[in-house]
Image (cartoon, rainbow over all chains, first blue to last red; front, side):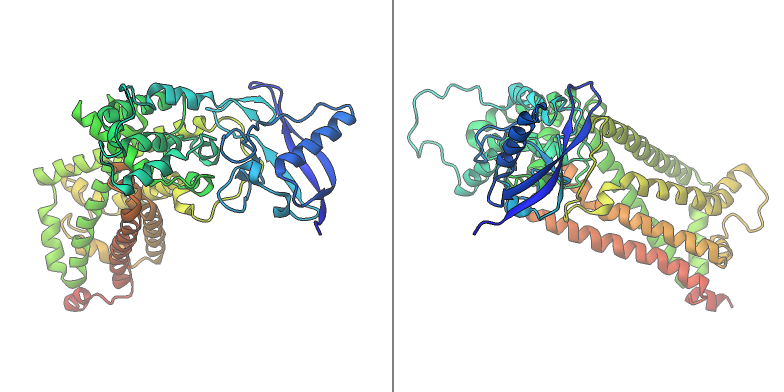
Length: 252
Length: 228
């Protein structure tokens, strides 16, 4: 038997990046516990529309934890307290209790201006990737699998870094609004592989320069990012980025 | 200049000056411990580090390191505050693995600076400065041992110094491994090693400082018995 719960939802309303925002509240009645958080918000919007009110705006896309679009700060934690490392879309109402007040806020960071309500502009991350998060070598035909030898450990670690979906939870959790966990994961996924090495120095410099230019803060190693990352990215990546960047600068 | 313009460069300056200050404290600590065992030995060190040119040059260098560390701390904090945006979260839940010290480095640093002010007034002003300025002082500028005895006979100073040392402990409990992380000499394996090395090192260092304060307050230092 699925239990139903009733609770109060307190959600952030804001009309644009420069507008003053505020919280609205709504009573949610008899929501089945196996409803996902985003489905619950769909129900909220149905009710708001029926009552002639403006629906609540939030980002979402795949709803299966791989696209990195959903981005809600729930009860003080980016993506809420999910069962394991997961994004907002994989948070279920069974994680909440009858009578709770659930506070939903947008990612708050100068690098992510609010577009509307809890939808924020994360194109800054795309700009950082455009600055150097790629390899520009001609790949040509697919090579024989044994043509470039890559130790299994490196391949696994590069894959772990590549699982970063760029949701921005790291920036949202950081008291310094720093994007270092994202940038370091994206630098690491290529720095760990031989195909990424030829441009490693250039990449580290270009991506850090873009990150600084876009107004993200300076990392102070609080580890808040690592604690909330839905893909369990490690701050070992940040150490690697520091190493790559310092090495590149010293070689100039 | 990347040490000013880039975020990692600025943090590199913080970590290098920080590590240098930890090394200075190690040196200072070795010196202090001598005072527990022999007043004469301690005063020999004081004489060696009085108004001699090398000691004055080293003091200026040390002051430059400290000023650099503090100025950068304010610049970094100001930038980080603006990077966070103008709006603050209504609800925040601190993740368990986020240490309190790591989020309060500036506040801890300010307490440390206040302590340094007091400490410079208690000792440096009455020793190196007095000698350089040719001031008349109650105790001879090179009688560091007498100065320690006089200062730590006052319980107010004992309490203030212990608060100061505890603040330094918290500051370094994060600062030590954080410096290694910024320098890039960290990783999944070394993370726990640096943390353990840092905590042990800093704890031993601070206990040695506290030991001197308490040994003089309670009159337990062998050097005091020898003098009496």
